[in-house]
Amino acid sequence: MKLLEFLRDNNISIGDNFRLLLQRLNLWDEKYLKEIENKIGEPAKMSKSKGNTVDPQEAIQKYGADTIRLYILFAGPVEKDFEWTDEGVQGAYRFLKRLWDFTHRHIESVRNVEFKREDFENLENPAKEIRRKTHQTLKRYLQQMEEFSFNTAIASIMELLNTLQDFEPKSELEKKVLKESLQIILFMLYPITPHVCEELWHKIGEDKLMLSYAFPEPDERALMLEEVELPVQINGKLRAVISIPVDADQELVKELALKDQRISQWVNGKALKKVIYIKNKLLNLVV
Picture 1 (cartoon, rainbow, N blue to C red):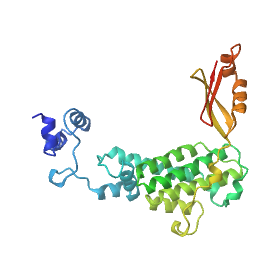
Picture 2: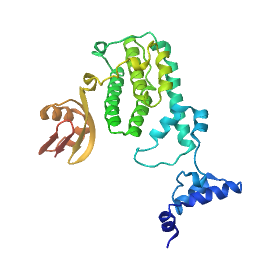
Picture 3: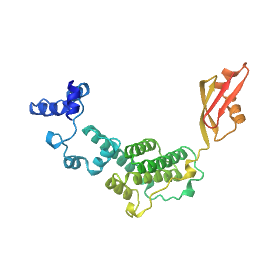
Picture 4: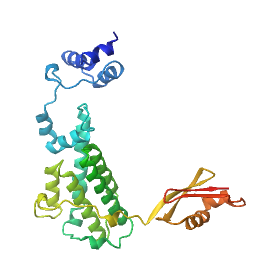
């Protein structure tokens, strides 16, 4: 029987033995252990009998309960096992610190700001795109949480924070957009990291506990696109991506495409034999 088959049949990994051996010999080397595990065995599963468990209390004291909850839910799908790593815990901690720092950077801008949805009817970019991204994330988050896809829900929140990083509100309206986005991020994270969220919630000017407020719902008007990016092909080869009005008809799309210099250089002097248009998805000009 091969060594790998023996280890799997007996629920043993090469990591179990090496961890204990290297620790006893004071030769612990995480990189070396992982190299051995990748070549021969599987990562060791936590077990009291093997002496390789992690004391959550130590991690909580060092990083806080919110960080540990975030790490566990972000580590992977709930139905699968995962290997506990200090790097993963530190990554969750860095994200919460980034949220903390970002919020504090804008506290003075948003603390006394109040808004209602009607305020956002005539937004212009970049605030318009920020708000669309926020409500797209909220809609996706609600679906992912219903499916217990906590790791992908958290990933969506992280992506939204990345988008907000470069947004510097200049007008009162843009400050309202930022405050709404911050509030929605805190609401989405609240079931996972309630202590951090509650603290930041009060710092941005809210008096009551977050539980006193209704959970936000996606604004369908914010989700509506006025324009879409349309790939344009010539004889099946992608030559450009153009902006078109949503649900534009074929004639308008063809006209806009032919006006684009990147497209016209491939069409000029040639007979246009066929136009294939999939609404909002693709335009293919056959010459």
